[in-house]
Amino acid sequence: MTATHALTAAPSAAALDAGFATPVFDAQRTFRAVMNGFAEPGTEHALDAQGPRCPGFSVAMTAIALTLADFETRLWLDAAAPIDAASYLRFHTSAPIVAEPMGAAFAFVTRPRDLVRLATFAQGSLEYPDASATIVLDVEAIDTSRGWSLTGPGIVGTRRLTVPNLPDTFVHDLVTNRALFPCGVDIIFCAGDRIAALPRSTRVGVH
Image (cartoon, rainbow, N blue to C red; front, side, top):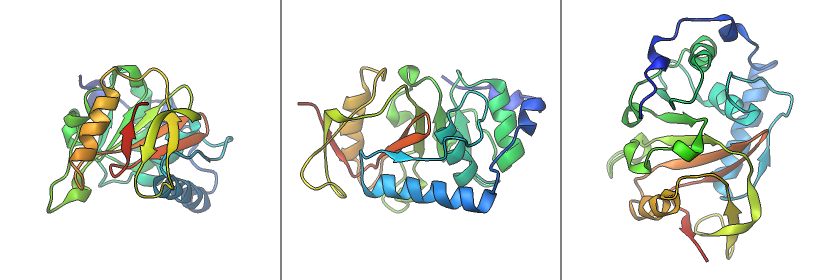
């Protein structure tokens, strides 16, 4: 599934909606939260609950897009993302919007239940593992009290995480993704103003 509307969207009033109130400080705060999330997989980290909103995005996913995207960063939006989302991201980041998942450095998914298979996104290579994609999903909730069993770098013992309404193939894809390490995709879950990350180095099991 591709989001071709993102390529043809004309600028609209939504594109003029506010971005960060204090761009340097807000971006630094968001970047630290994302880095801490990847350093401690499966833990929740809060962003600014009063932050800006890209149309169809949560506060957290908007903050990540404003922080990590620039004119050289290829973005992919799922088909459920409103047209105004592409206008907003172009206006505030100058990032190009691509039609195919494989061409994106960052993929923003507003309807996670319909997420395409993880193998559809750029996986990187042994020479350039950093050429892989980061997938950012807007989800209903992040629960760190139960669910999947997480192990690996940044986790002492075992950590728990579960996210509702994901594809039935998602956990299988995560297991396959870990087997590709150092290649494979990284994942950030966003729920309201909170995030949790799953780097490609994390092992995910179901018990």
